[in-house]
Length: 119
Image: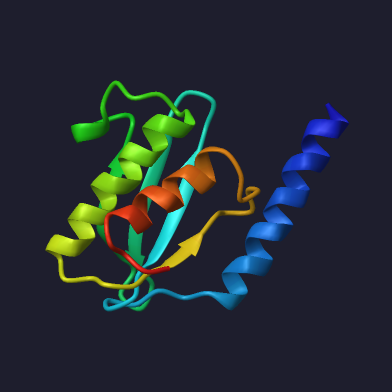
């Protein structure tokens, strides 16, 4: 159990180090990624007001039934990108929440870029 606790502690440290450096606002929101073993979540957050501008997940909405794999996370990224385009957002900041930029985290970012959002 100690190994799992240590891995989570290290991820949390990376997350806090990243969050100190990036902030999102209305014109350039922070896109937060959360991945569990069963689901995948993407949120566009305005940190100045503390509001979520757009969100997609494999748990509800258009993404319901998708799995947290590379192909499906790219689809979720495209859905979030389309929602942000409709809201008038052109650029965003990508917050990987201490996860490696690899696999589903990378695929989601590429899906968002394919939708026309610059990061």
